[in-house]
Image 1 (tube, rainbow, N blue to C red):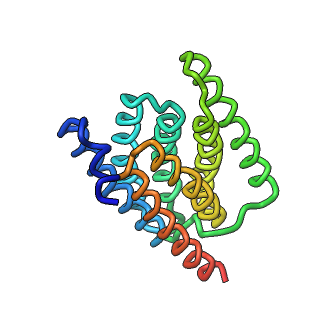
Image 2: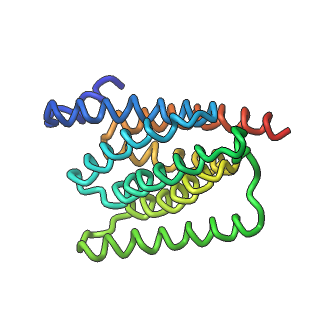
Length: 201
């Protein structure tokens, strides 16, 4: 198990290892703050996603890179949305998606898959079986991030599903730290879902 995590970094530069570790720590902090409904989810998340976008770009994983680039954009939107106040009272309580938001979520999921597929073709990348899992995870994560910005409890269900897809995917690619990070993300997402459900009840 230790060799699995260390072997992936034999040929990595010190800078790359440091950046991945920073993204690892800030990514976990972001999910922790999201669970607590703390607005710090967004600045910590921005640090993690910007670094991860760069690392995935130089590694050539375009699907994963697009996910994290989108996370960065949505973090700015979510930060603004969560920070809106109405007479000093929280103007964005936790809630469930309505039918319109569910339909938009499904549409966003499908559009994301198509866009990522087109990006792979545009850059003339050979699409392997693992890349289809990239596309599926991208669609799920894009929708989850939008739901989180709206404080919809369903965002946690989507995070859990998406995480369960990418954990073995990153392990297969020998990205041990990322795989471990998403295992932690999954545990925190389950915990967060249970906490948000209590608040709704």
